[in-house]
Image (cartoon, rainbow, N blue to C red; front, side):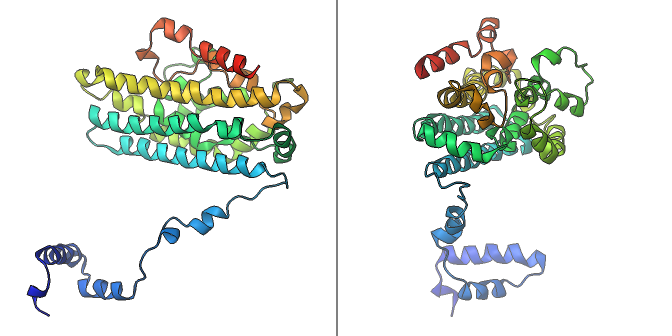
Length: 322
């Protein structure tokens, strides 16, 4: 078969493939022959649909437990999408303001989708069914989402994630291990009555502490705030970029925790005996942003905004639920 039997586009692609494989000592003809025996790709194999749909394994026979499982799995996939963007930011050898606008914009959209969809959980499950199957899941808790912790570490300097009461005591030369030891969310996984670490926290630390410390070390100079500070002063002052960072701060540290707070208030606050359904976590003090005052980018907020951090949101949520 002569060259004239192929279009110029096909010939150009064959030439590019030849250039790709020749330096590797590979035979292009063998690769092309392999295409003769390859099956066409289909949708269900590409996304592993059968495997995906087999991953919902309730621990009880209560129907609404499947909703609970699927929504949390969807959440973790969205977190993975976010981490994909953070990794692209960290890997960029010459970061620009436009690159950050694109990446942070994507992360915000992912969180906004999660926030807007949380009513699937809050309004989509029967409260009585929830309290029944939730007790069968002890001591598991959404608190144990390592991807969410990785997102926090990717977003800001680790010092901004330390418990606010301990932050001033940490010296400027504190190690990542020392700062991780004072990280804010450990206070949220203590028993409300005794202050002792819950089994939820002990299990999480055993599985993930070493991984998260390595993650913090890797992103010490590559987290979103560190990359932002590498930009030129003009790019840093871009109002659109600053607004994107504020939206991210609000989405991760206010709006997302408050969706969980809304759920906890609705299902748990009227009966103290069911606090175990959160894995024993001290959610009343852990979830409300006004208590934690966790802020990724305090430099871009006014003193008044920081002082009122999360207060209005909490009041609105509690009023709505009550």
